[in-house]
Image (cartoon, rainbow, N blue to C red; front, top):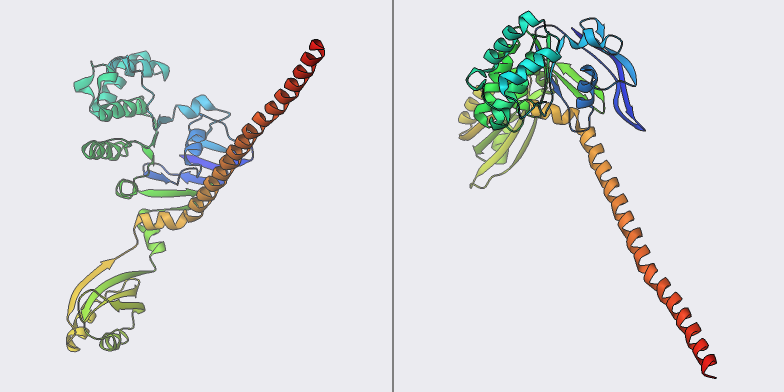
Length: 364
């Protein structure tokens, strides 16, 4: 459906997208993730034909977005982070305008407008001015223009930004329903939303593809083990004796807790193993009660942070460098301002001396 080949986008010396390649298959919801400045929005703008690439190509249903823009764009519906709305138009009026811009056949325009409003729940507000709608309904109008004409691919950039929890759930359900008839590419910073809605996730870092897989496989890839946190009443020697008998424990850390005679224990356990029952009976036999036991696994947030750690480091270094440049400029400007009064004083002193000398001559 979409094929991105060796895509490069440069802004002067800055490389926003660096030889990026990936494929999007039909009938799935794709999550497109990356930290700020990673090249995510630039890639989406190239895919939709808003900007051109420095190198590489993007094929939309077999059509090159650069050489065949009209045919390629017919396959795409795009919702930017800020929906392209005309606030002084009514909802139905605006969607009729969109149907004309998209060159939908005249005989089908009314049906398309009706269908897009029905799918996005806009029928109750069809006759209202867009400026008077809530943020959630404005986002729905943006979605309605994106799906106008039923394009094969829907690209959504931060579709739930600024919405309240109820509106987020409604938009999320709408995205799921769109996937029944469309391929959806969803960009979002809300990772829990991405993991819940998307079938496949692509993570971009430094303009390159850092990972591409299902949410489950990404987590499994990073989760070579899982951790158990325990509070156990007993001595360090008793606890070590029980844990040392467990073959599936890969590492252990232990320290006294706030409670008297209770140790805080963290265990790393091999993948696909469950030793909770063995721990229970082992510590019961040693007369060491387990007061608490919790299990934790790698989340999508952990995967994202791990894969984009270098991006965050680079961002901080860039901000620090920019701040140093600002300080240097302020210092230079301040130094220049301090010198100027001195120069004027020297000039004024010279002029005053000349004036006094001329005055004396005239008096003589």
